Length: 386
Image (cartoon, rainbow, N blue to C red; front, side, top):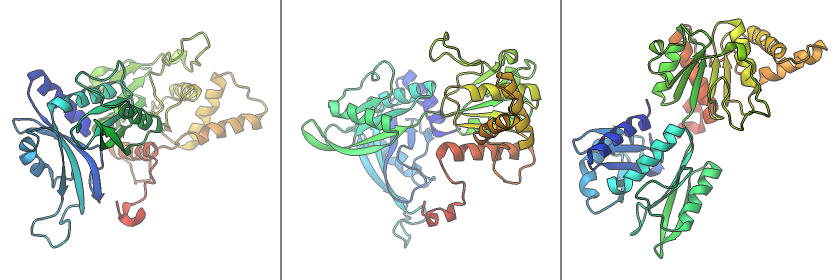
């Protein structure tokens, strides 16, 4: 479970009780840090907290001072991971300085409301925040439906423009703008959409994959054509459990269907991952053919099992879609083009054998692909500087 899934329930509880709280947001990092800008921690008045802003070396210090530091409004504070009696500049932590925006419910409430909406919709969000001067804590949002949350006062149109630009570019940005007639630093935090993991196959080996996906904070759905397997009691943690209309797959969207209508597979988004692992040749072939027919297929499609079987699945999928099987060379070339879009066999080479370790290797490959990372040991990436 990631920080957002811990923070949002606590925030809802405190809001319902009308209680005040402190939200700490990492807004800048100098040197190395366990957490990057955008990391959040929520502090309740009874001492509870959710989320982290470091690897554990700053949380207690932040919590001990956050309430009186924010007594007169939001502020930005710098924290070092140094030990007080250490000889190194930044001590025993990761060796950096972290700047935190600390704020109370008055300005943090709309942020939590925006994060909740983006989380529920699985949509990207950009949050532009003034970090200096009298306007500190003022915000604009890019990507919300129905306008800004209650309590938001947009200072300048320029602030909204920055939020929209960050959302369009899918990158966080920082600029100086005029806020209330004074030049002030604005940081725009781009938060990508919550990814989804669609597990097509409700066998016992889907359960560890579901558990690991939920630990990462992803939306996880389980789908299968067999109702006795695709049952809520077998997958209580899943965000969605679907019984697939296997006989209707592959379903290719026709011109008569409304734009944006959901596939029989479910509401897969471009940032999602799909894994095909029903252990049924007919099901896997139909599901794979339907996935490859989507106008916007998920970012990752993986198939459990040897590549030989995947080629056979693709050949059957081509037949189901009514694609010509002659000449044989053209049909084989089509199968190879489809195969190049897949991860087959799926997973990283981690020596996995049990369902749990196989699930771990699959999630590791999905994370690598969604993040555009290398999966190399960190000591080999930029000299281990990160």
